[in-house]
Image 1 (cartoon, rainbow, N blue to C red):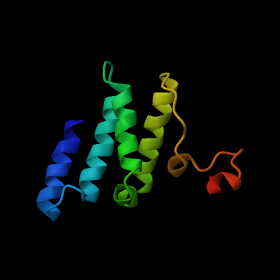
Image 2 (image 1 turned 45 degrees about the vertical axis):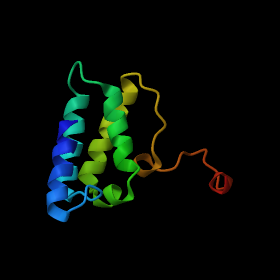
Image 3 (image 1 turned 180 degrees about the vertical axis):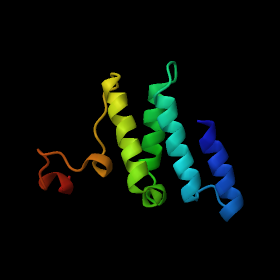
Length: 106
C-alpha cells in the first residue's frame, strides 16, 4: 500500500498534517487498492484493512465521490467472493433488510 504513504506525504506537504489528505490523493489510493485486489498473489486482507481505514475516517469518507464508492464496493464484493468473511459496510451497501431501529440504541 505504498501509494497511501505517498498520498499521506503529499497531503502533509499540502496542508501540513498527516491527518488530512487531498481528494486526489485519496482517489489514487482507492485505485491502488482496486489494482492490488485484482492481482494474483496480493494480500486480499490488506485490501480489506485499507478499505476499513478509509471508511473509519469521516474526513476520508467526505472526500469520496460516487465513482470511488463504486470502486470500493466492487473491491469489497471481490474480497467476499475470494472467501474473506466480511460484513457489508452500510456506507457502501446501505442498511441490511433485517436491520431494526432498536439496534441503533445498542
